[in-house]
Amino acid sequence: MRGTMVECIECGAQIELSEPEQGEIVDCPECGTELEVIQDNPVVLQFAPQEEEDWGE
Image (cartoon, rainbow, N blue to C red; front, side, top):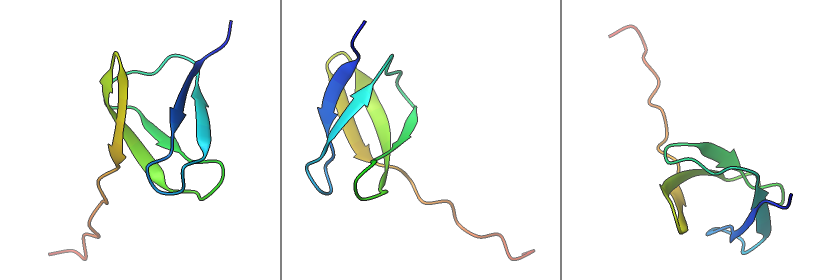
């Protein structure tokens, strides 16, 4: 079974997702950008939130 093809919003590369789920984080195989699935039908991607460093504060 073939997965769902989506386009990287950073570089335009095609990314195949086997079973996309809302909240899933995926890496673009071309540019390495982390993307988050914000909607799974149809699949919509946005840039994954960047985790802030906790410097013990």
